[in-house]
Image (cartoon, rainbow, N blue to C red; front, side, top):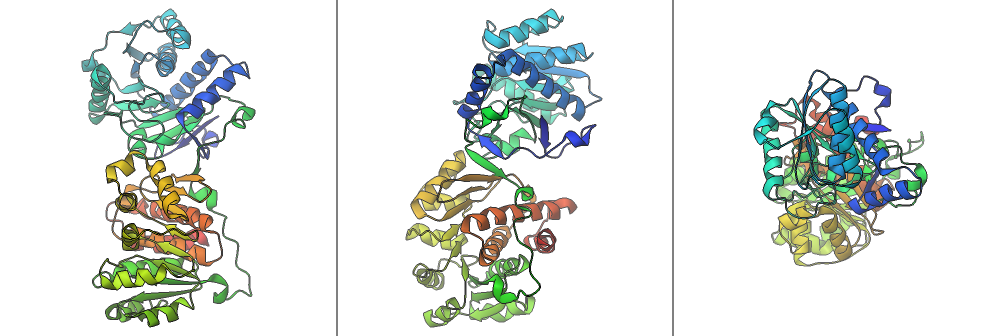
Amino acid sequence: MSQIHGNLPPRHHPETVRELPCNLYFAKQVRELDRLTIDQEGIPGLDLMERAGLAAFSELRHLWPKYKVLGVLCGAGNNGGDGFVVARLAHEAGYNVSVWQLGDCDIGGDAFSAREKMEAAGLHVKVFDQGELSLQEILVDGLLGTGLDKEVKEQWREAIEAVNKSHEMGTRVLALDIPSGLHADTGCVLGAATKADCCVSFIGLKLGLFVGQGPDYCGALAFDDLGVPPNVYDQVSPAAKRLSYTSVASAMPPRQPTDNKGHFGHVLVIGGDLGMSGAARLAGEASARVGAGLVSVATRKEHAAVISAGVPELMCHGVDDVESLMALLHRASVVAIGCGLGRNQWGQALFKILQKIKLPLVVDADALNLLAVNPGKRDNWILTPHPGEAARLLGQTVDEVQSDRIAAAIEIQKKYGGVVVLKGAGTVIVDAEEDICICSDGNPGMASGGMGDVLTGVIAGLLAQGVSLTQAAQRGVCLHARAGDLAAQEGQRGLLASDLFPVLRRLLD
């Protein structure tokens, strides 16, 4: 069963192209799935290798049907064995094929058998010469698999860098199972990693393809389960779930004819210090656009009239003291705090009040920075840090957070409670049950000011309509990401946060 996800040409038979599976696995779990398939189901490892090679070769032919000059780089393990199968099939199909092997050429097991079959077909391994890579139209990366856990060095690094140099010159690159040099669990680049146009992953989708630097290196992603029986998957619980808009598209119930605005909650957005009114406005409008019945904004007096003039549906209030904020809190059902809040005395005073309030909270931006200074823990808030804010919450560096985004999100949840949304490519969502979800939608055009404020408003607006914290976080992230993808169809560069508003309405209709 082959599936594909990403910006690639459609196959000749579109009905065979389906959404990627939702289950994501650690590398050791995929190895266990492989073992169970061999030991319990009696499917030989060499058969699985043949299926992997066939799936990869079929993908290659669909993607680049006019290219016939192919180079295959193989390592000493099963990843290299998959490469030998691809090379043999391409050779038999009339391709001009070159095969290079790195590492111990005295291999054993299924990889050895795959190489023997390739040689029996008349194709032999060549001495590696990186100068020949640029002569290829397609390069297949079968160097290093999912077992890699240390920095790539010496000949391996030289080979990967040579592949990437050829890729920069226009050579297409297909990675087998995972781009070589990418950590299968964290998506961290271990010194150097192959930049692929497409990665064909087998048996189970690896977490590292969706987090860290994984999305930068795997390109478009295809998947084939190699015919592993369903009962094998039943024996290994996935490490995480992949979320996309299609998985939450029908989550909001239809409205009834007798419903009124009181049925859909009242969001109070607190933020917009001097010079930062736009952040509060974006969050407030986002809450309204996803269906919150009422939205109020507590901001600086200097900003209240300006925000109301721009979005008259928002009820804007200048707040300078505890009494005026408390009056607004009594009417609210959900509070979103942090968008343009600042860390000066005004922002500190408002956040201090919120730490004592029992209303559900969505906490973002400077409210997270204030939380890092004065930590607290509660069950009914959603924290939405970007990597810099996550680093401050944990007392770490941004690099440490990015080196294992899943571990960072889990640690934040344990320390602060509630639901954590660690933003970025492959946004990670962790709740109190330590259920891990990763959003696979979104695009680089969303790396612009105000996008986080819109996400905060979206989540708060959904939360106000009665869904749980976990559901609001998951649905909000996916809805926001999908809206960004649709808005970016007119171009990623120059995409504004407010460009998402008309799309959000269509997605929720």
